[in-house]
Length: 163
Image: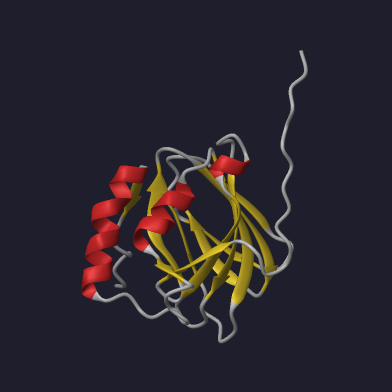
């Protein structure tokens, strides 16, 4: 018996892209490409506040590899300043968040194992084909994200209050 695997190529500038607020997610490998083993996306995090609020995934593990720039990560209570070459793995169930506090965009690769995260972004993001630039979340966007996240095993928590 021969098992035939299909290979694929996503060249520079290729992939399905969505704006998630002001951050750009370009999917290089979808679940349908990887037998649902993983999703891989290139993410450009907007300067001065782009990123993700405190959240955890119950369906998937999430890993990050910083290509350009500097991100502030929190894994549970641990603060990490991630610079190019930094690899971070957040297993399912771990509370994490990341924020670009610099004046330059950050580029990173994000792996989700197993796949499925791409469907969340497709549901709540805005297709690059329809919108040229991302924009801050408005109340309707935020309501949609909070309502949709549990469907994908994502729990979004409010940011910690500053004392």
